[in-house]
Image (cartoon, rainbow, N blue to C red; front, side, top):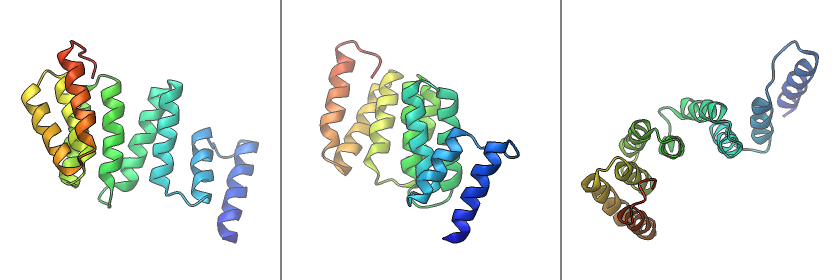
Length: 162
């Protein structure tokens, strides 16, 4: 614990005097890690906050870093889905679909991946693909049936931005 505190103090001091660049994001991630959060989770949370602020370029860097840190490890599908929903929100449907598909490969039992890919397929006017993914999401997690039904109703009412 003393070593961690020393590193934090050195990093903070170096950032103040300009010897080492320590961005606001890095400080936020470090603070969350000191509270016991894994680094990948901390970067993902920062990505969410930056997205809400409209800083999409920095948000994407945070999501990419979270996925890099989790690469090949347990629960990577959570981070792929988060970035997939980010891409969906940005109307980059091909990137969203790729992330959701990769999340499904990582964990075929994670319903959120299917729901996200279903919404992306719906936005791409792939109704059969969307229905297939929505059905699987509902089978894996019954609470997703309501989400999927709402997405389909919205689509049928002419809202292409699902």
